[in-house]
Image (cartoon, rainbow, N blue to C red; front, side):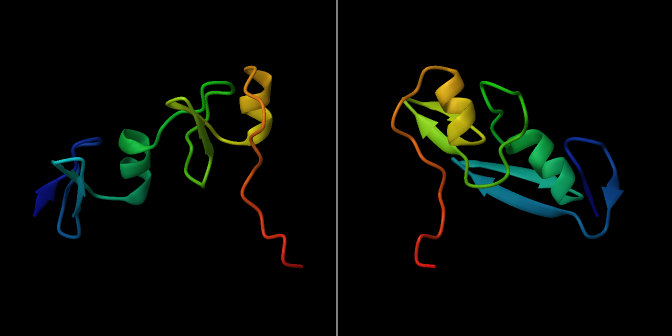
Length: 81
């Protein structure tokens, strides 16, 4: 069994996430998101979808980026319909 690095749960189904040369152990996706997901620099929510990035700053959507003065970003969307 492995211990989740966020909540400390010793869980038989814990999993590892390998990212940027480090290995992290979690017992749930919730804990993995809590630890690893970037935070929107406008509204403060965890960016668990596509999000947008401008000059190394992360935002959950183009609206939040625009509210911080970033111009020209659009949300990812399917325009084939």
